[in-house]
Image (cartoon, rainbow, N blue to C red; front, top):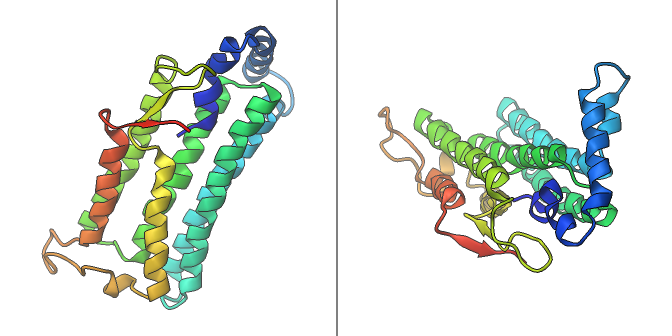
Length: 244
């Protein structure tokens, strides 16, 4: 999901509101700064306020990954570390919503912002939840393969969104009328389930449903199939969720 791209990708909504002429110089200036051969901090100067907020989303996801790694390297009874790993992700969602609000308020959008938004979402709602699941105990080789499938589904879903958002049907305000597949931030539902397991202390060897085919190369935790299912829902084209 990308609030910025759905509302203003390549000035999509701005053009429909009659403000494309004002937004075009902004994009031209950003392209000039990004393509300049010289100039100190040209990348920073090219960023809009919404872009910096998007980076905060990515920072939340990155800190979540680091916290999951810290749990794997530390005391397995320190469940508060796992809580912290999951706690960063709702903040990532907050920044994901905020950058779109700011972009529409300032009437500034860009292709760079579109790409930043998707990359930040992949970290916060794809890689970070998979890292948390690994930290919780889904660590067999097959678990890792299935979690990788989940992350790749998120990656493919975001790439498809960036490609198709300009041609999806739009409402009167210029926003895309629906999402194709479940938006990637809906992964927070899985984070909520994992938080519940942490609350009950059912982690590592006590994960719900145990382990299937234990002792064989096909050993895996059945709960990892939640991530597989969610990945399939994200990449579905038959699922169309109306935007609020």
